Length: 611
Picture 1 (tube, rainbow, N blue to C red):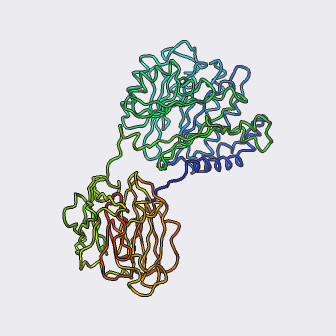
Picture 2: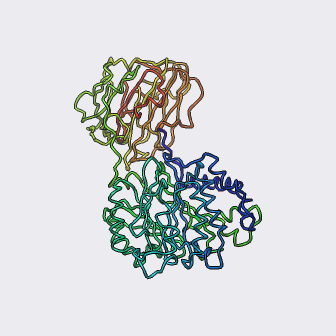
Picture 3: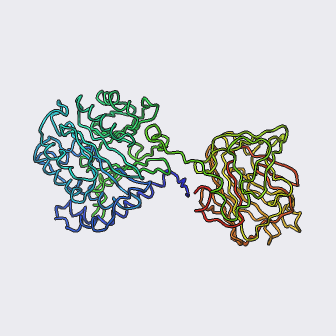
């Protein structure tokens, strides 16, 4: 699988493109809503009619968050237009590939006074989502109920409008506490189940017991805890927030992210829980800003390939008014770009969730499964090397150890997660003075004279240590063919280079330099830099005419288009971990080398050893 290593800002740029699309689609809608004009019926129907739905398997998805909307629903000052614009944004953008919005969490203080007429108005607005089956959660803030009470307070207008009965039958609704004030919701994204725990303004002892039970009944689900009050300032929790931490969050490793409103301005905290893992605690609230926050939403863009959550804050209502012309404050509030409102959170999701849902280790595969048609040689290191390393293809291309300056080869169980064999050799090469050990094919091995004029595939797994230093370790070979470039005829470049080498440049990055049968000079494919302390898979594929270098199954940019047929041979050995110059060993690998396979035909990416 081709692995992406995009810069974190790439997500924000793509999200911006999505907002521009939305702006074009909804400018008239927003302007009409503000002017009090009746909204066209097709405005909502367009989303359901488009057939777009969030992709539950995509490793990129978005959680939308809406904080305090109380000033929009305050007695005689009720204006649902901003929240309706935000909710329609979710409908319009929910299934777009660059947004993939899977869920909305409201953080409480839906209303200012908790009055029936206020809840009637905001309840009607949320009907936009209800009619389209969009998953969302709400919770009571201190303005939605009597603030001196906890979740055992009994009946309220909040409960009448947003109690469990509202969510019954919805695909994302998991259940509620017996009092109705605490709910949990489940959505599927990135191929797994995620749990949103929507907790009341104040949890009772029963509320804590219920929350712990919900988490226990979903032991492998990452949990996003939402509540009205928790973080009060940067790296500071309120007294009630500290209680939540002590009684619930700290001991439940599944809770990795918390979201709350109530206070302003936006703030963040990070704490390590009892398991030693980070919990990200975020405060988001904009009621103090223009138009009571204008139902502004925060978008949490999860990207599990890049191990990041990119966060942005926008006002769909103001975006939708842009075509009509914005006033001074609207121009400032359309999108917030300060560090508190637009940022990235780095999370190694697999590692963070390993304590409760570890990624299964891919089992080792028998060598016989790797012997595809045309396999010329296959070496793997399931145990320490002692004497000869057998060619598992059965073709007799066995390897022997060559020591330089007393160097030895180590062994490690460390390996690429998709490597067939579960082991690697540890090379400790050093340039000056030259020291280390490498492997060499035995004299008379069939591989030594093979020219691969019909094509070839060479694959290897490697990992470089943190102390890899270009001045001492660059240009060592992963796999190379000995014999001088000039030994097979007239050449127009350096005659002392080897006939073929898959080496590591000073980047470090893989480089394939080969003397083809049809050229009088080396043809070179250059790879991108590959970071140390990460396992990499590299493959060189020649189809009998052209050569393509792949890293992690992805073709590199600098693949030459000139025809390159076969690999010239002077009948000498191949090396693993060694590199010769002018027929003398010149450099030895410093790093780990896993399985290596050479096949006498071009393989598709789907047939690489990683699959």
